[in-house]
Image (cartoon, rainbow, N blue to C red; front, side, top):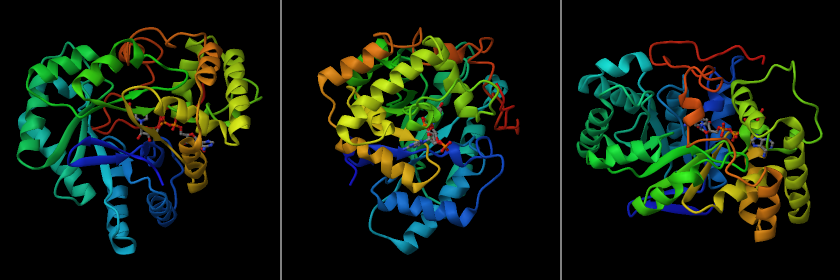
Length: 356
Ligand SMILES: NC(=O)c1ccc[n+]([C@@H]2O[C@H](COP(=O)([O-])OP(=O)(O)OC[C@H]3O[C@@H](n4cnc5c(N)ncnc54)[C@H](OP(=O)(O)O)[C@@H]3O)[C@@H](O)[C@H]2O)c1
C-alpha cells in the first residue's frame, strides 16, 4: 500500500499521485483506447494511488477522470479518490479576467469531473507583472467558501508570489513544482517557506519525463529522435546541468543504488524526492500499470546519507539549474519559455513539434 500524507485535518492524499498530462493529446497525439485507460486508472487506484492530477488545460483529461470516478464507484466503492485540477487562465486573458470568467472555468471543471466540489484547485498566473493575480486568488477563495472548491493551491509559484496570495488572505494547501534529482531549485527558497507556512510540495518531473529511468541508461544522446513534449522540456534541464555525458554518469550512479536495493532507477529517483523536507507527494506520469508498480517500489527503498551524497555529487553538488522555481520557464523569450503553450483555454493546439 502507498503511504498517505495529511495536508489538512479533513484531507489526505497518497504520496504517489498519478499525473494526467500523459493522457492528453498534447502528449498522446495518436489517442488511446478509452476503455483500456479507464481500466488502467482503476488498477492504479486499486494499488493505493488514490490521488490523481489533471488541469483545466489538459484537453479531455478532466472528462476522462469524470468517467473514471463513475466507473470506480461501480467497481470498488471502498476508498475515496482525490482529483487535483488546475486553474490556468491564458496569458492573453489575464489583464481582462473577470470574476464570472473564473466561476465559469470552475463550473466547467465541476461538470467535466461530475462532482459537486473540486478537491484541490492549483492556480497558476503566467505573468507576475499583469495586475489581477491576487484578485483572482481571492475570487477562487470565494468559490472555496461557497463550497465549490475544497482546498486551494498553486503551481509553479515562487515564494514571493505565494506570499502575495497569503497577504491577500488566501490560504494555500500546496505548491506543485518541478523537483527531482536533477532539479533541486525548490531548495533555494521554497522548501523553508513551504514548511513555515504548512504548504505541501507536490512534485512533478521526478522521472524527468522518463529520462530518469532505466530506458535511457547507456543510450546515445537522443539527437534527431522525435521526443514527446515532456522529454523536450526535461532535455533542456539536462542541458542546463552540462548535457548527456553527465546525465549518463547520474544514471549509472542511480543504477548502482538501484542494484543494491533490487529496484528500477525510477524507484530510486522518486525515493530521493519523497525524502526531501516539505515534499508531500511525487506526481508521476505512466503509460501502464506496470510502470506505476515499478515506481511504487520507491516506498521499499531506503536511501542512506551516503547514497544521497553520491546522487548529489553526480549532478554537480548544487541545486541544479540556476534560479528559483520556474525562473527559467517563466522567461518567455528563453529556450525553456519558448516551448510553452500560453493559450490552451482558447484552443491553442497542445501538440507542439516533437523533434528537437
Ligand atoms: N504543473 C506543471 O507545470 C506540470 C508540469 C509537468 C507535469 N505536471 C504533472 O505531473 C505529471 C507527471 O508528469 P512529469 O512531467 O512529471 O512526468 P514524469 O513522471 O517525470 O515521467 C513520466 C514518464 O516516465 C516514463 N515512466 C514512468 N514510470 C516509469 C517507470 N517505472 N519506468 C520507466 N519509465 C517510466 C513514462 O514514459 P512513457 O510514457 O514514454 O513510457 C511516463 O510517461 C503530469 O501528468 C502532470 O499531471 C505538471
